[in-house]
Length: 372
Image 1: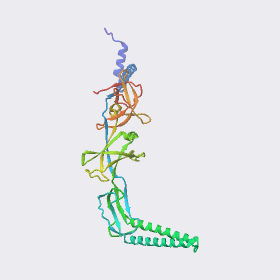
Image 2: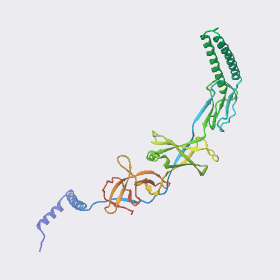
Image 3: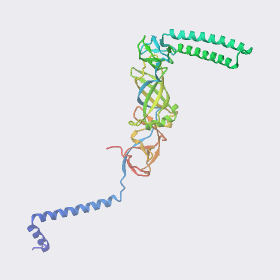
Image 4: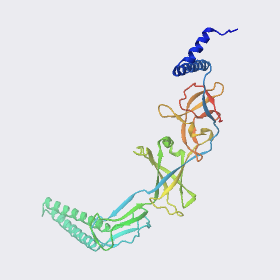
């Protein structure tokens, strides 16, 4: 007994007799309908389950006592000066050697003083003569033999001779150049026994009573310089890595470098007896924050630092009870030798987001992720 549905038989017969392209279109439409039904079903399920953003957490702990960061520094002299005579003449002494350090007051160069000594003797004689003339004119004026104007002329002549004597003495003193400070002779600019005019540069010296060490600091660490006494800096030379030299803060620039956007910070370094230090040398500068107590700052991964719309640093605190995060402002004090950021503003018992913190907002629920 044939129980097949005539309608199904008719459809089956039409399918068998249909062209190939019509059968392919039929199956494509059927697959599309199934996919649409599956997608609608999955969307309905996702509306009922909240999708939490995975983040990596870091447990905040106590920090170390020092936050050390290394910079490449450059040694420089306090000042560089080209010394010259204030009078002209022939150089007869130039005893300094290039590369030597001469104490303050030591002779740098000297001119032939013969002409200036003769000028001094002449000025002394002329002053004596002017003094005798002034006494004679005073005696004549008291007797009424000369007028007051004649006496005034004699007094003026005597004063002019006194000025000429002072000038001659000064010019004689100008024939010698002495070191104005403990000076490193970097270059002799002339040779001995030549005639020079006043103002001719003779010797270039550098003030090495103490040295200057310059480093460039990024803008995110400039806040440390708000209290210069709260930082400790040391210079480490490659030739003496086990002898760090203490540095003293002197000044810092407030205008950043146009290219690197860094600020120049200057430290002072005393002259060293055991280390040959010269201007122009490079040195490693260790800078650390002198924080009074370890509870004032904590070590956190640099990846956990975020910034708000004003550029201030912040971290995201994770609340295990609600799985939500909230922002907390922090202050960056520096970076230690392990590359961890040292920040102030944490209690030490928080869990903070160290990865996946972009696009977070206050109250957002997240899912801790430890790895696969």
